[in-house]
Image (cartoon, helix red, strand yellow):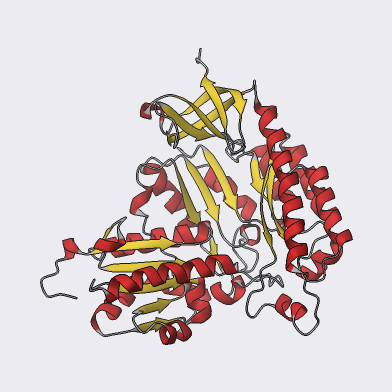
Length: 453
């Protein structure tokens, strides 16, 4: 670090890959480094520190990370005196290998290094290259309570309720990269939510690797359903969402919350992964197709307008044509309004990797691709039908800001998470207004504001 560099002049650039948890982690790092004199910048060219926050769930995200890292390393070789850090799941997974591969990389740290990011950056800038992939003590895990400065003025915000995962699904690398599960104390979660509401946030999204298992591991912790009631009691919270949930841990109490809590939104992301019991067993998901459908029925009885999204893996090792047909049939039965669907991606250290190796049960790439296309075609049809069903109806829309595409048009979401665009101005941001949907499109709907009596 230059002797003439002042606290005010330091700038940090973040590049984030992956899920909501990664976005949230970036926000926490941004908050901590701001308290250490750093100002976030959107330009890597003017940054003193570049942090690449990584995801290793799928190979594609990991390759994007390496591509971005190459770009920033070129800037450094061309004379920019920048400290380059890799954080997150790939950092945890690769560790020293990354430092060995990239000699101009300064800092590598996993998710458990985030609470110590200020000290790690200082060390990398003053004493040399730093590696931190140690897991922290679960009994006293230091969840970061600093608010992301970028959350100010936002309508919605994430709040983490746990770290890690204990499920050990055979396709998933999360237990390796994020460690064992630990639930955050409920009073910390409520406190952070209250502070976010004080900044103007209206919608709280609780996040974790498996939010439904919150509080199940430690005696004295409250269950997830009770946490939802406590968040609902916060004055100023208008909507509550959560992700990601695991069907295995959906309880009757959680289903009842959809009948009791109007603030709990009418949209739920419930990853099923496959519609075949045989594949679900091989994935080690610990529920059946029948149990999943029972959960869906219970949820829709408690909240008739509830819509569901999901995750689907096509071409999991050993998946037969019959298995995949059962997954397609599940779409007919549930009618998912959207889904994240992918071809199976082999991840290092996962049990499923052995199925594709020694056991030779891998699905041919062209077969997996064909199945993915069929699922996505069916999903588009289901999504379009649902969007079309919204036409003519009046829906409460929580306004988020300007539309990305049209001047004089604002956008926001319904309780069912439908994106609605309608004529308006920024005075509506943060307000919930009735909008009549006039036309449905692929990823959004158009509407007109309805006058309130």
